[in-house]
Image (tube, rainbow, N blue to C red; front, side, top):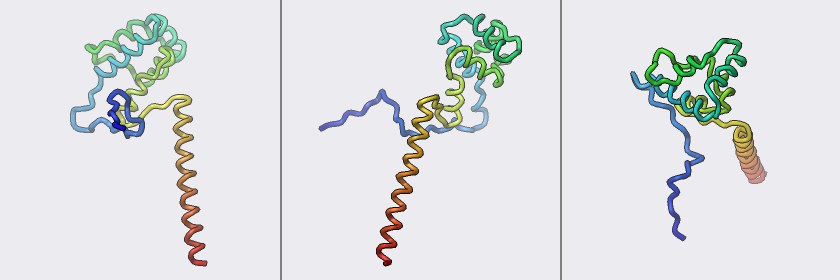
Length: 145
């Protein structure tokens, strides 16, 4: 049976790599603004609603104007502060910025059930490895007896 390469499905076992740490390659203000814009657009809410929810969550006044500035790639001086990212993601109902940052650092973001599945897989691998070592030790002890 001939197998055809699937070019559309990501490799689940491929290890993510961090972004290169070369000089002058990590100025991400435009990418952050783009991620903020995508998160806002994908929320299905107005920026006024998101700003109000963020203000409620942080206890600080966050305005629609601030969200406009955070999402404008041309306004490099107004990038979203890191401390506001959790509130923005909660208000928008997404994890886009956290996933983007994880990818930049060579990681993958797993949420909820995905995280539990990953932990279960890790523990099962540890169990299987321990079982293999136990069998090997028993075999060695039997040979010596």
